[in-house]
Figure 1 (spheres, rainbow, N blue to C red):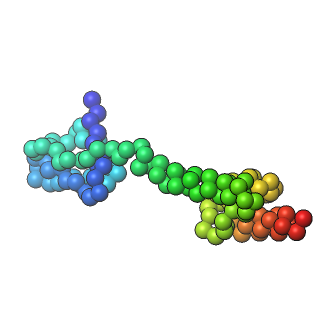
Figure 2: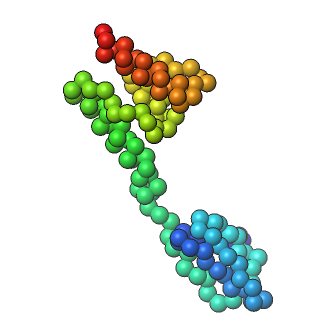
Length: 124
């Protein structure tokens, strides 16, 4: 039977072996300990983090996108700047604004296309 441990703590944890050596388990690392002769008790490896923590960045990004869309609908305002957005975020903005983007477009190409479409809409 395979026995594995995963280090959920912020620091490395050492497992003392009967031969006097120590096996280190780095944060996030999973180690199969079924073949090891462990001396004493295993260290505290912590618990897996809550799923909400894992999704925190995505939730923040979604809230920012909702705020942008509400600004568009509510006051006819354009979304906030494009600087610092990931390619996926830029593609989402382009799609929401009806801007067609080529498959091989770079971030700068996408930004330029969105800005051009916004200028055209503002002049119309």
